[in-house]
Length: 337
Image (tube, rainbow, N blue to C red; front, top):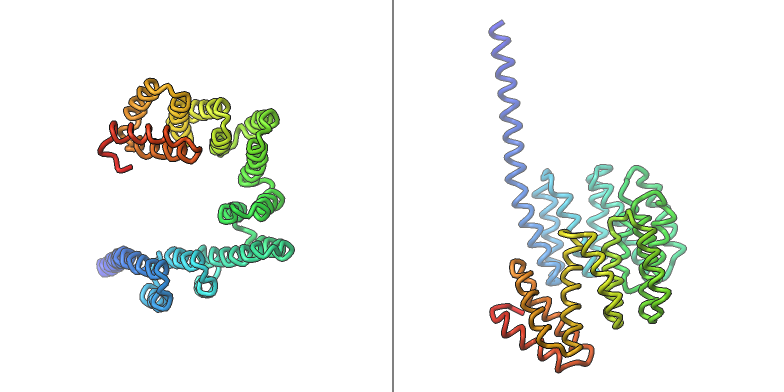
């Protein structure tokens, strides 16, 4: 009985030691793989691709059992993709698909390989084949709940290609109608329509569309960001009254958090801008003092005022820009701006 008890005790003790050793090895490996992956990223950024390729091979060999291997390989593949080294990115995705099989990173590599293909098709304007890729992604990964998000993220990398961006929004809405990203995509389309109206200075139609946007997407957590973007366009087109109105709404609705904080800064900057443009320099100087005090802890005052001065210069008002630059130098002499 005692012998059996001791044997069981030894077994449990040995098991605990094995778990601790495995954990400590994993903990020790991870910082090393992070450093190795960081070095590879630097080589990719500096276009030292052959050295990066060799280092990637070493990563596979030296960290085969590291739990952070998949995460770091995805980051490296993204670096290759960003530099236009698509074959190298695909090579990593392919090996991950083989090695990690149907695990999380095996699936994620498959999704990203499909996204890379989709991106190239969109750049070529081949929407028929792009549609087939999306259909295949849904068929290959039916259990994944992030596909709508993955497609939506792609709209950011196609921001300058309006046609592809709108096509992606439509796909998110059509293919994943019950996903929250379908709502966000729909709101983005409506926001862009408003931006177009504001840019054309069709303010009556734009104002009406803004009211509808707020009503239609009242429950969407991205509404504040969209309103902030619209307010910025109103400001850039010279409709400062409407811009101020929207900034104030976002500031009030999202007080103490993003995008309320950004709206608060934009609202204050716009007030300073109006005073400067109206050549009410005493009031503008007082507003700058308040702005400096309000954002003293964040060190944002000088940077934001420099942005405003740059904007005034860009609007063909160099004398007013110079006045503001002088105020920054006088009131924020230690600021890096």
